[in-house]
Amino acid sequence: MTTKKQPPAKRAPEEPAGRPENPFISTEFFSRMRDYTERDAAFSKEIKAIGDRGAGKLSTDARTAPSLEPLRGVIKKGLPLKDMFGRIVQGVESGLWEPWLTSFGFELRGVNYAKTGPRNARLALDISLASKATTVFANAGIPNWRSLVAEDCAQVQIEKPTEKTPAKAYAIFWLDGAD
Image 1 (cartoon, helix red, strand yellow):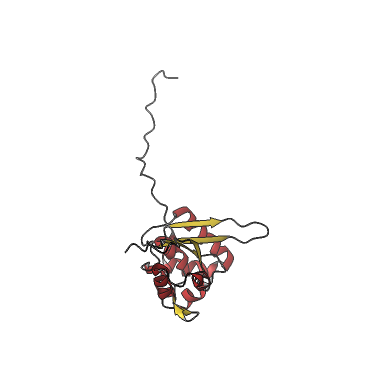
Image 2 (cartoon, rainbow, N blue to C red; image 1 turned 30 degrees about the horizontal axis):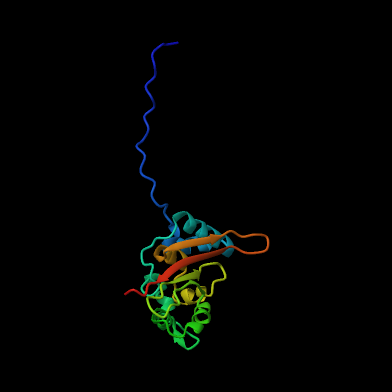
């Protein structure tokens, strides 16, 4: 036995922990994964990656977010979504906002209803497996839309599944009327 102390083991310099990567942002990866994974398992993996990465906060206003472009042009209930957003910001036809948004998979989570001042609405887009927006994005050829939306949104909320309810996930956007 030696009485000489051993030098401490050299450690690799630690890189600062940033946001983890979400491989599902790549359409190629998503398509390849979907070839070998059934639908529910693919959804679970994507939602886990979204939850780990969190919201990207790249474009939090629903009127300008690039990931929502396919939705903004769709007409439901006689009006395109981009016009609905405009009416919310203007503060007109407030009784119709929630039914309009529901047909696209959005919930109105909060809004300033005061007659003066900006609306500053908080919108939650359902990014769950049974989301109403899935069809629109599928028709536009965007299979990994959930990951793309999560990069633009201000916040991601994921509710774990229970025995009676499936997993729910939402991407939170804003309608800032202070333009």
